[in-house]
Image (cartoon, rainbow, N blue to C red; front, side, top):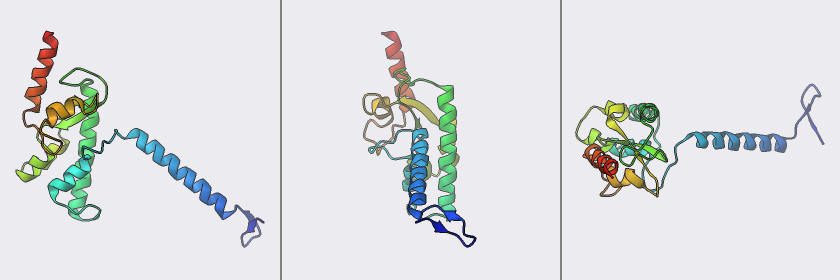
Length: 168
């Protein structure tokens, strides 16, 4: 039986509205996730890296620290897009598949050594590496000792790999 409002106009059934709302939410989520880079379980997101480096409480929003976290993450995402437009291949192996940006000076070092946090979103602090065949060059050159440790010589190591590849 249809519902009626105060003026007697017929309204849609609440369960239909709920179903429509659910479909719209799921569709929005699907569109949003399609725009996001692939996230791997073994490498933390930039937001998680910033949280860990800033020693914040995850999920506590509205504080000045969380506002900075959002600012740094947004700056990184802008720099990442710009870097990938500038360099369209892995700087170590040359592939154009599964590209990611790696911080040359890691987020952890930036905070623990008191460096300028703007380095998080600085394009010159990023190097383009691939994650083909699993972790690819991002793991091999950016994190050779495990995802928790960043290689401070990543640029030199990637350049050496590129020159070796070119010589073959």
